[in-house]
Image 1 (cartoon, helix red, strand yellow):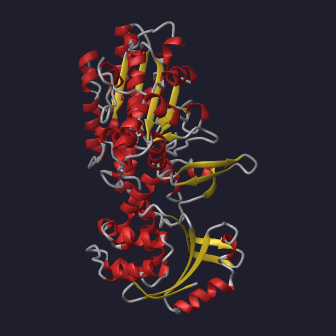
Image 2 (cartoon, one colour):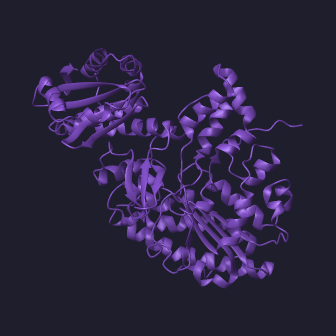
Image 3 (cartoon, helix red, strand yellow):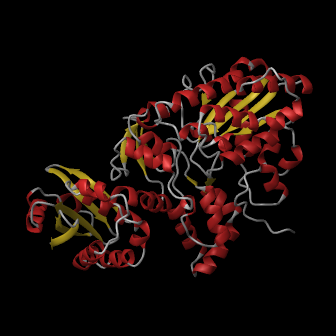
Length: 526
């Protein structure tokens, strides 16, 4: 029997099945999906299996029954009707320099279907070409047509806040999508997926029946890998990885959970792993930050800067759905984009208040997110944080030696090479104590240490609280006052009192930073 393999880099359902790759069976949800509504929209983060879902739908509607033998859908589907499928991947339309070139690229994407179903020289625009393809495909096959569009938002993300280009690009996309409503009688099923959520009025202006299933519990696990799927289908992979690490399978499973699990896309829904990262880890038998191999997306960095986002406030945020599940172009903060892009996920839901608790999903996202932000917000290179200093700093805190940790931090920051081009930004940032919070927050997060800044308490806000396995550290940082005064403020305002019943040792740290060097100059610990 051929040994099963991990489908890293493969998003085509037919290739996965024929190549006997591992496949987490989602076909029961695929069957439910095509029976749920005619026009469906789904948003999920990048590298989360959206493309695999679209190719699975394409194979299903083409009637490729042999590919589904032994899968859950075989107990549900009886007819296996065949439909002509127009499957378009708009990821190739990223980074278009102009609206005209976007129009040309959309035309190019549809070229294979023009070869298949014919063309009409009168059809000049992308929308008219798509309309013609639907008409001819339906006539040629004497049936309705299935439309599947992957990464529908790819052409728009790079021009999200460009006042001149966004309206022009959006106009092209509106014209392109118009036939989806106009051809309703000829369409059996229409599935649209992407990362972000543009409003129906701005993009799908004529589709008034587009059903958004992004936050529906019944489809919460249609992308991603559940814990049950991991332990059922890939138990041998966990065991092989455990042997390499010198761990038990249970211990290895726990490490995989901590690193890659924790995404929730609806209230009270089962958690899922990032499939791209999990499969890479099992293939390489290595725990690494695969989701961030290509770096934090530039569009996300731009949006965080555009909205002056406080990057330290990304854990345990209580928010109503309309604060993060909103149209992309209607955002008034970076929160919706952080959620839709997978940097935040749902961790809890209070039915009485209808508030969701949002947090960073897992260790991989925490490390990769802060690594991408470090140069932008502090001027420090992430590699300099990770090399040497990080291990020493973390060990000192874990051992309960706050003085040694601060000496390591002082030595590190004193010799830090700042990124070229950020000197003016840093000089401005150094006039506010917020710079030090950003710096320490990002460093702690790079070490996968749970940290929160500006923590509310009865008498005010604590600058920073750091949770270690045996110790909780309460930091107060001052630029224009002494370390002793900072420590005194912790006592006077009772900043440490809420943590005294935790069971862990509580350590108070007052720090004075030099405004010119941006280096911790003195500290007192109690």
